[in-house]
Length: 292
Ligand SMILES: C[S@@+](CC[C@H](N)C(=O)[O-])C[C@H]1O[C@@H](n2cnc3c(N)ncnc32)[C@H](O)[C@@H]1O
Image (tube, rainbow, N blue to C red; front, top):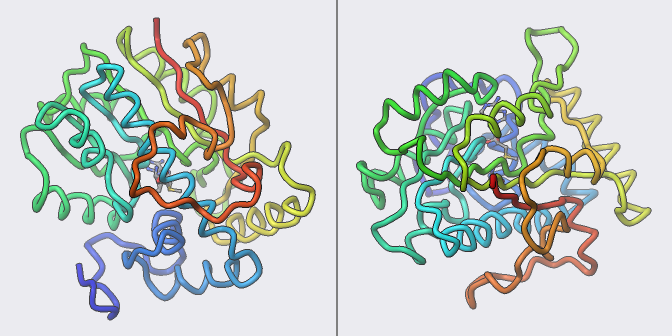
């Protein structure tokens, strides 16, 4: 992977015929794991809505604070579903700061670029006994659980911090031309909740079009239209629908809130403050819950 500003060489299996959610998000975060087709798509949105950059960064910083918080609660293993490109620091780096040498992490994504970047980072700064990146589709929980177990990195009988951050608003096209299906939805999350042992936590962040500033509604409509037309459809859920994804898990304080509001006390001195005038501009609700 190059960082020289030239086009990076795509890993095997990368589809450059259409923009990819993982690579667009990487571009929003300022990374270089993206291609012309992703940047053209992202720039069309950024030209009109430059706030998408601070929104993406605010979400990623929530992920960091969540991992820091859960590690302090005693969680020593994380499974990060739809982990994306490690542009602003990966979960294991954050956990390492709190409990050096103790935390195990499995990253899962179906985008080859995200997995290749994660593996490259882990080769340099990871520990193969404690960190792994798996190329898999999270819509097959049983198959994925088997793959995770096979790595020997995660003990699935012990509490896990299961992260589903900015992934559940993505829909999937079962086959080209078919209508989008709500595969990354309540049923799938319920299956994961059942798989988790007691003492585990589930962390979720999700875009909503409810309760946002009035002038942001047009932005969300435009984003949805563009993603839907690009072959990566998305869906926005209400606060109630997002809360229901936690099932009967106990939602921890401060509850389901806008990303900047979730445990700001876990921010580090080096964390930036994304340029949002109002927390509602983050358009992403975030929370975590424990399986008692
Ligand atoms: C918006 S990014 C979020 C990345 C990271 N979780 C974060 O919040 O910073 C969504 C990620 O989910 C991945 N993803 C979407 N559908 C998936 C699926 N069915 N299986 C595995 N990964 C998926 C995408 O490839 C992308 O990397």
